[in-house]
Image 1 (cartoon, each protein chain N blue to C red):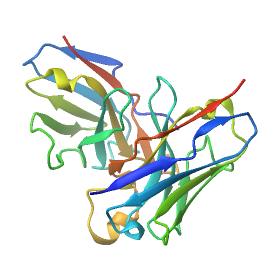
Image 2: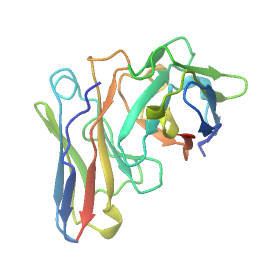
Image 3: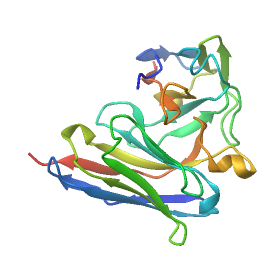
Image 4: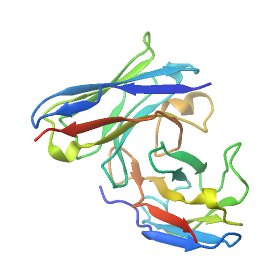
Length: 128
Length: 112
């Protein structure tokens, strides 16, 4: 059974940094593209960052480019996002998701395709 | 990144059919058959109900169906049930951004 477990969310102040983690199990981690998707309170879904299966390709939303870095550790089967220079507008639940409905090497890339497994999310919020 | 356009809300009575539209452009929906639909209940993670325009994942009710015409994709829910009440988001491949994916604005489905 595929499981994705996010951690690392919490209360931060503007300008601070935070690292979110997503522990994966139940599938061959390095074969699949992975993503971070966020959802601000009461708002819609937003792609934040995507990383290829081998970690060699990364893509970012314009809203986080230059501030966030997505990475993955094959040995630990864990996905990360390092978030720097956090802004109040980064307040959201952050989900990690696994590429799905694919076969072979196509699973390693994104191209706007579906993500079939999602974690429960971790909340990043700001203190006043 | 501009989101795909969906109606804010759609409602229907149990047993009826409803259709949710998702409008984009030739750079996304109109140019590629890479449209997905996600169902999200309050406080839960999204779940795929349709991928690649018309494909339904194993375990998803056949009451859910997808289609596309030009720059607009649609999700139809037949025989509407109380458990279908949720938020629905479309997503698509896009050439407008390097990230290559874009979500719709989301539609709240209410079962009357």
